[in-house]
Structures are given as C-alpha cells and as structure tokens.
Length: 184
Image (tube, rainbow, N blue to C red):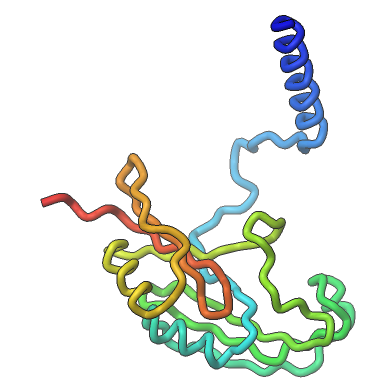
C-alpha cells in the first residue's frame, strides 16, 4: 500500500513536471541582454480620482508635479493596441517626481465598462510599486499614524532587508523597503 502511494506520488509529480516543461517557452539566456537597461524611470498607476492621488503622493512622499496633460480623443487603433475598452476615455494624466528622481505617472480613465475594483493581488497583471526608504520602521509608524491600511508588519529578511506593504486610499499596493537599522 505504501509503495503504491509513493509510486502514485512520483508518477503524478512526473506528469506535472512534464506538463510544466511543455507549457514553458523554450527560452535560454542570451550571452548578452537583448536590451541594456540603465534603471527604472517611472511606474504608471491608474487611479479613480487624479486630484486626490496627486495630493496623496505629495503629502506622503514629497512628490512634485512635473507634467499635467489632458489628451484629446484617442483613435480606435490606439485603444486596440493597448487593450482598452472602446468606450474608455483617458481624461487626464500626470507625471510626479519623487525626491530621488523616480517618476510616478498617474492616469485617470472614464468609461461605462471600466472596472474600478482592483484585482486580487494573485491575479495576472496585478502590480505593486516598491519604494526605497532609509528607515522602514519609522515609515511603518508614519503610514499607520496617517490612517493608511498596512498589510503586514515590517519583515526582516536574512540579509537585513526590511519591507512592508500598505494600501493607497484607492487600493493600490505600495511596498516600502530598506535596510534594517543597525542594532545599538
């Protein structure tokens, strides 16, 4: 009986590995990267209320407003290329700069078919932005004091990296990450 269970487990594991290898694309690391990346310029976030989101980034992180644009109607080909609903309209977008130079681009869309509820974080295409801070523990206390929802208490990895997640007022996840303070 025990041998059958072990054999069945090994067989099932073999099938799973075979299926995974068939589903995974054959991709080998090139000798040189396809694109030479110099760093992250900005991240983009869709928000339900652009004015409130601007104030959030300014008061929480000291962001400054760099650009503020109200585009005209966009062609259907553009909507198709970017997988937008035909009824959607990009009403306004801004670029904010954090004190370290990192950009945060905020977009506000309107349309009858837009889903304003965030996906679960385990859904495909769900994202978060991770910002570096010099003091994770103080940042955690400031976020809690501001009344924002934290998702976990600060975690310290074996290498000394600390991090925690919190939610923006509209539900996007932000991670704050840094090195643990030296013990005194």
